[in-house]
Length: 116
Image 1 (tube, rainbow, N blue to C red):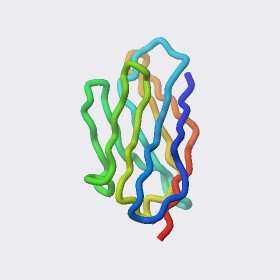
Image 2 (cartoon, rainbow, N blue to C red):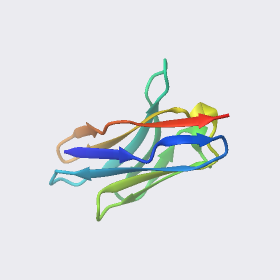
Image 3 (cartoon, one colour):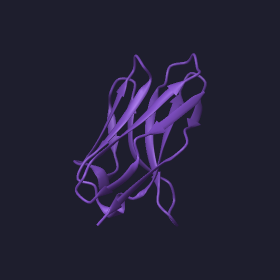
Image 4 (tube, rainbow, N blue to C red):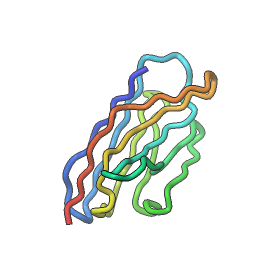
């Protein structure tokens, strides 16, 4: 299983970025995609998650600013991030959960830096 995250970068406060997470190399369906982030000196936290039926959840800190979506046909998850704040600066990771085999797989992180 491979999860390739992309789309990070440097942006000014108030700007936008869209992260992508492309999954490949598996035969089971991805039940849930999740986006997590980890800032320096802090624990990794859930940012947003989306099920295969499209039900989404968000951390309170990003509600109304971030939108998670997925393309089931191509096994890609997206995280649209608007109105970015300096406190959104972190390494963002995607995770795929396969419920049929109860297996989590993490992708590599992508750095998001928001300047004030």
